[in-house]
Length: 137
Image (cartoon, rainbow, N blue to C red; front, side, top):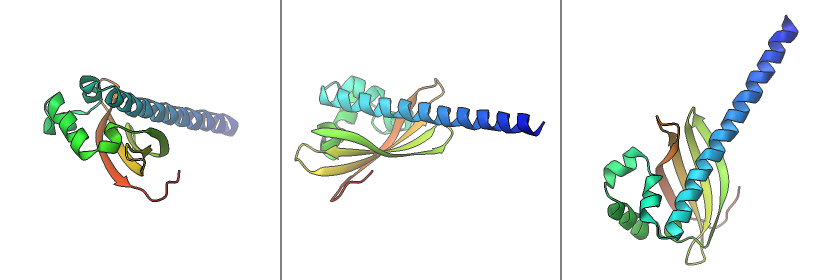
């Protein structure tokens, strides 16, 4: 009986780790999709990755793109980017660090928050950006 319990516990632990990895990869795919859309000047596609709370504040593609262009130039036109630290803060909730080389050649850290939506997809609920003197993962 004890062995069966430990075997069940191990399987559940492995499944939850796998589910966490799948959520993290899904969240990273959303961020990557938005960054690629921004680089391609596809505002509608970039906007499609924004969660309802963001769309409430920026109700049109133009308003969203204006905010990103004026407030987040490194996110709008990164020279390069890589995923850094990630944390699952709860079921369906992710915080993802993205290390960015901006259009000015300087290093930046963007911290994205993502939330699982009722339709089963992740969407970006926020992004904070700061200049970084030294980047670490």
